[in-house]
Image (cartoon, rainbow, N blue to C red; front, side):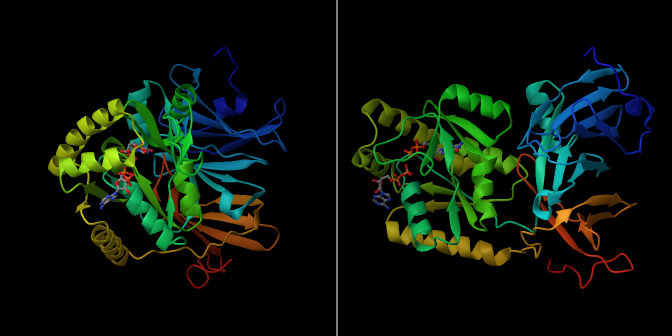
Length: 394
Ligand SMILES: Nc1nc2c(ncn2[C@@H]2O[C@H](COP(=O)(O)OP(=O)(O)O)[C@@H](O)[C@H]2O)c(=O)[nH]1
Ligand SMILES: Nc1ncnc2c1ncn2[C@@H]1O[C@H](COP(=O)(O)OP(=O)(O)O)[C@@H](O)[C@H]1O
């Protein structure tokens, strides 16, 4: 890249962690070795809110690589610390940051990153924010156009507004008369959406009936952050992508009682012109065949009589909730600021002000890029270095 290699990078050993202040850009940067590469993470300028930068130094070719950076990036204010974890990701702890925004992961060799390297044909790294506890399993609902997905989801959201939240997708299709931006969809144009896809902002996307549709990471996280169970209305290709991702979801396919009834409903809805109706019916045949033979679905539900189908949907979701009870973390949306970080052999301690020392527990990580990394807890430390009363309230 024609840039000189900083002294601290040339001198650092494989395991050594190095943090340096770059006076030119007034920002802290860390370098972490993994294999033959060194990952340099640079925070934003002091007091600024620009996203964190990543570049890679190849120790064999002695040259810099600018990787494709996926995912929502952390915004730094002060410095940060970094350490290699699980031999596939770098744990980044932001200093002078609130507890619920201080833990991030830069994935460098996880299955997701390996896959994306093939897709992009470049070096790839992916950000994933670390969050406390587990999230309720998202519910993925698919089915042909006009089968009644929207009707069923609306009923669920109306009956249980504080339990379920809808993942608002992005689409390049034009809004229908009764649809509003940000509620039914985020309506966008193809150029913007394609750029956002390249920037890794989407969990999944697909071309459906001639338009682009996609679920952004943010759309799901907004719902999960509000402690609701996320409902996704996505097509079969999207369901496949989510199935292949690190997200643990339940997949339901809604079938029509007959093809004739599907056509009747689609026409009665009166939202599509004839050409679109024909396209949707053609696609419906393929979707039904795929879902019934080798689709990614856990359950198929026939939407014949609406109330009957709705009751079955509720029963199905309820039995899944019973089977996997939700473990919520006690790590509150804390205003405690992390002032310093200590990495010991197998433990990470967060210093918060003068008195508080918290133990960061990352032993049961779940998920990861392109979504968030869950299962993190912090607790006050007792003199032996263990947690006080297991996981404690902060
Ligand atoms: N992959 C994917 N499919 C989506 C997404 N949002 C909507 N879809 C699917 O796109 C298809 C068309 O949706 P829409 O234009 O609202 O028409 P409708 O199905 O006739 O109501 C449906 O199969 C939706 O499930 C998304 O974010 N990702
Ligand atoms: N079980 C049902 N019986 C009859 N009509 C239905 C039923 N479910 C939905 N509909 C109607 O069918 C049309 C398509 O439903 P919609 O929810 O928009 O489908 P989708 O979201 O799957 O495209 C709507 O006019 C809706 O009122």
